[in-house]
Length: 505
Image 1 (spheres, rainbow, N blue to C red):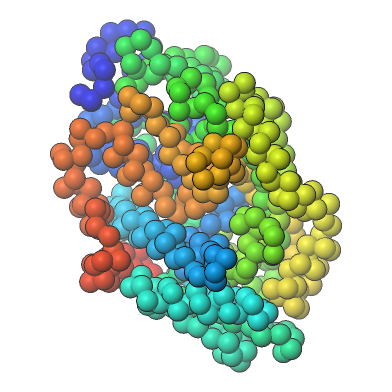
Image 2 (image 1 turned 180 degrees about the horizontal axis):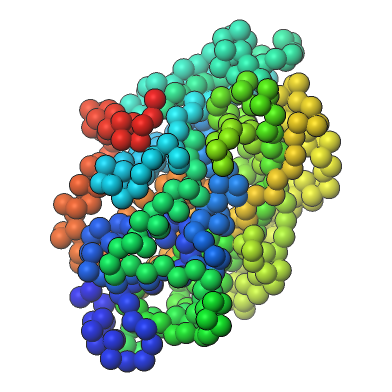
């Protein structure tokens, strides 16, 4: 790895186990980066450490991750309306293109024989936006008009006809009041993605490769840069009951909510003045076959007035553990843990002298969100089902059970736009100035756009290799370096190829 301060062979002579690349966390992000790097440089030694006993058990797990293929086809929070009533589709276009990058990579892996049976992790599922009330109907119509001018959204359909909507979403339209106007958009290009299963398939494939080692039951306790520029990673091996030292030329922290504390341990300047606020998600789950079979879509609504983007309600048909189920939410919860299997000391331990003021500023700026969280925490199951009836008027209490999903850590940082302690929604890639370490912070839509984000990490951390790697990257992702919005023919070509490879309808 000639863009590093020293060669792997030189490091090998010093203490500690040596590898070229260390990745922390066995979720979809680390699995994606490891997969791409192994394709680009099969001789590099890649070592991955995971605290839990298997892959994809935290944020990527199918019961912890509500994102069933975020492609901006139905998520209304990706098309905000400004004070003048204008709809911005920039974020939706970006996310949709990023999702196409992911599906191209998955298609390549299937066609190459690296992963099999794509129907176990991805299925066709219509994506629908549904609103009621005159103001929201007007918003959805403007959104539809704006999106359908763009080649990535030409298949979108719009209707205000209750009878037509009853064909799209029969469960949601049954016994609904006819006094209030309703509207919906529908895309048949949507998918239901099981990121837990996809992660397991990717890492199972990598585990059988030369030069790739995946260690479970290994907790990374510390990570420091040595004087020679390499990274020393201290790992608690629970199986062997040992404390090990490993050295690498490049390190990536993809540990979900656990990424922030590890990034802070590195001591790099880029880790300063940032913080995190943990929010847990809760969903109502229905396994009643009679109810489940009447809803075959992922449906997003409009967030309640004055609430943060994370409150956008959605009702999803999911296929998990071999059976179909419905999930409705999210309902926000709170615990100071940064991971579902984390520690109650995670949040207080992340408060440092350099980010204390930013954390306090974030709290003062987001009192409405804190108040919202307080209200969510006191809700009974009956109150949650009553909220569900806004989506499903005929919902019965006995058909729905409460599920605690995964932890999400919202990034807090100082920005020019948001000032001190701005709360960020989305993901952010951070890397050291010498490009030898990177970390991914934040949350949705991380899993769905993981391929695009990891290509960004590669571009930023391995610039000296890009000219050499570009042909292989284009083999995996034909649209690499091309804006799909300017090339509708290529968009149609890769969409058809991905659908065929992934066996989508």
